[in-house]
Amino acid sequence: MNNLQKKILDLKREKNAVILAHYYVSKEVQEVADYLGDSYYLSKIAAKVNAEIIVFCGVYFMGESAKIMNPNKKVLMPDLYADCPMAHMATVEKIQEIRRIYQDLAVVCYINSTAEIKANSDVCVTSSNALKVIKALTNKYIYFIPDKNLGGYISTLVPEKMFILNDGFCHVHDGISVEAILKMKDEHPKAKVVSHPECSKAVLQLSDYIGSTSGIIDFIENSTDSEFIVCTETGVFHELERKTTGKSFYAASPCQVCPDMKKNTLEKLLQSLEKLSNEVNVESDIASKSIFALEKMHQLAEGEEK
Ligand code: 13P
Ligand code: SF4
Image (spheres, rainbow, N blue to C red):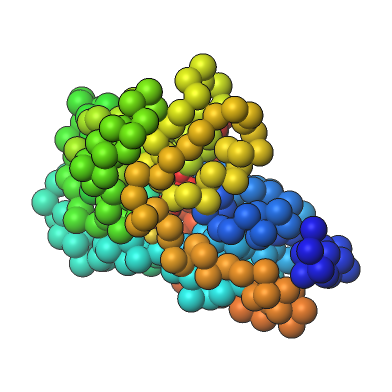
């Protein structure tokens, strides 16, 4: 632990705060977290945590969802400008248009979306629970927003439903090319390719395993193979190094760093705890509507971890 980390831990106790961190933030920030995980795990923790103050080291939609589920708690973020660009790649107008066309429709929004989009959706999903949640819906038509890659992938697993996809994507995952993976495969022919479902269809087609961030970590931990080409944000490497011995992980491409997740630095985390600054606030009308989609996700996904 360095001095900054020690100060953060002392202050956190003094202020009765809890720190939640996503696997994509830096190792130093991961080390001071009370809870470290993927977006579904963190959203479950945020729904039941007791502390008066939640400090969310992730991107804005994560802090926003924590606030929606805890309207009476203070939710802080080290940097309020840490924002997921994909969260803004869906529109209320388009949702309304699709609702007018299809009768038996569920609007399913990836948790990587704004509170306004959640308020206009029927249910949220994360990459770890999307399959279970969508299978539990009775609707024939699914308008999946914002991520075309996750939506496209889940549609192949639920052929009984008709998916309408949206054009959103994650630049970190969608930027990984087949060529980059094949080049890495040339260097490490025995390596298994493991990918997050935000990767492109072509990348998913050549992957040996597809799963959420936690799914990838568990797969590698339990695999008898020892080399992996990991197609997700490289922040997961810290947890992989902690949980495994004698295994090697390779990133396929330099694009696998989320600049927004990396805005969460120890300095900014300390400052937000000291000053109780960078508070997340959600307009009450939006918050009271968006909570339904989040609660429905938790209800339908109960017990789902990966
Ligand atoms: P997970 O649901 O796997 O944590 O993914 C969140 C995310 O932002 C992926 O880019
Ligand atoms: Fe958004 Fe992609 Fe960063 Fe995840 S990795 S927060 S989807 S930009």
